[in-house]
Image 1 (tube, rainbow, N blue to C red):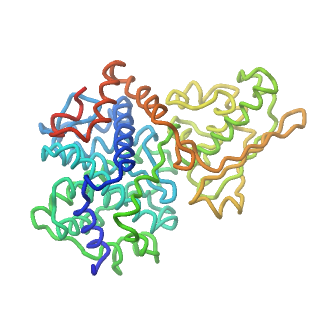
Image 2: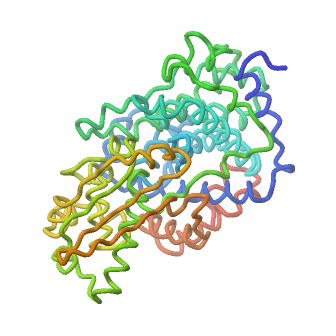
Image 3: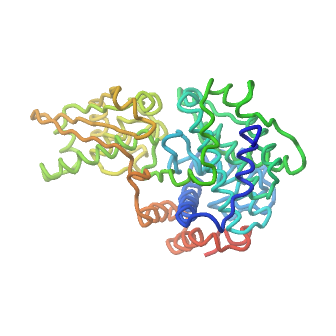
Length: 459
């Protein structure tokens, strides 16, 4: 019997055996890894990434660890930071619905840096990812939604996930992994206040989480101790950031319920709270096309009198920006995302550029969107993401569309071909199509790599 939650988690992380993992867990992990790589590669081609890389230019140094999307290698801690940062820039990295958390952005960079440093095998790397995803999702699920009111879960809980993933790859003993989790909790941070001014802070959170988790694991390997009751202690993480929590679920069914199977692949590069609104808008767009035979933006804008979006209070708080003035704000604007979906179809990276943000039909429709909190949708928002949209036309007709689960959720899955299409579209922004194909293939066979320091980007 373990005396603390961290010790129970640490024993589990230490004993995961690749040979005993279900095939669907391994396959899902490789696909999520590829999806993360695509987000990181695309992220390096952004103004925000340029600012971050310039800021840490003097600290990068030479090392064995890849900065994904570049031909540069650096030290483990800096690689974890940069890769965590870039992979969250476009809001395209994976997410876990119930726990309000993006697992990949903090977890994979820490595990990758540790694996490249140690020259670990692809199997060892994937086991680290599975461990990190499991630990992070379990903790996030236990403390949310209370924690989410002020804290960005990806930055806070992501530090624990990164420590677990890196600790497993570094082959730490159970006691050392517990120490790593203890010190990860003291570094966990990430506040939502950046949203009030549209600041660039959000990708900083997973970057620091990946770096902090890896640092915690490296310290633990040297005998640096951490708080063993960091999760449940009177002055610990859960009490400090969420109040009273139901923590028993963190260790329930460890080793049998692989929480990585619950992860959503995002199919739109915007806040996850905008996704069922987008899906509903796309459904109405298809019906308008069938009825009118013309889906040009000017025609649709001329048909629509009013749009009412029924959703939950968290979606309104996080993604309710009514008059976005920047690409970043548009990603957190249900009015923009719904309007764009009705006018132009599925959003891509280009959808959030200035041309779309400022075009006349989009601005007209955004002014006609209202968001209302539906108590029935509020009750189930963690287990689902239901949204209902009503579009009133100028001739008096009302079109209504309800979507329960986002495209890419486990309950509404997309094919591996669709995920590859997303991958190719993102990675081809930085490299040739043949190089993107080679990179996808490398990700799909990463479990056979004998040495992660050599095999990661090989075709």
